[in-house]
Length: 75
Image (cartoon, rainbow, N blue to C red; front, side, top):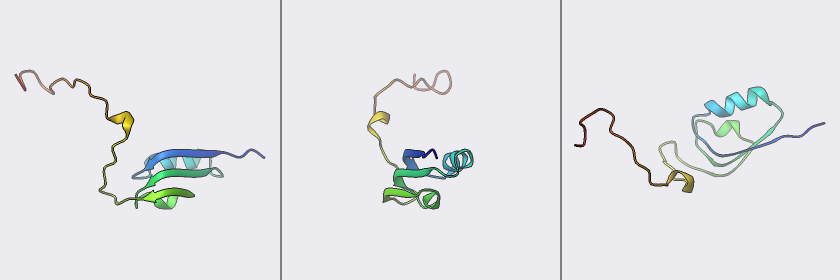
């Protein structure tokens, strides 16, 4: 009997979580942050946050250049 643990940093709308559960229905799904729209998908979580809370993860905080959406904007 193989046991699978899925760990995610955040469940938000549940789209990814539902796809993973369809592939691995018996896996234990754990997350750090659970939002209300997907809270029912996880078996365990650290904390629940409101649906409109934006979480800044360290790996998303790197400064990088973003080119303008169209030519001439920002010149």
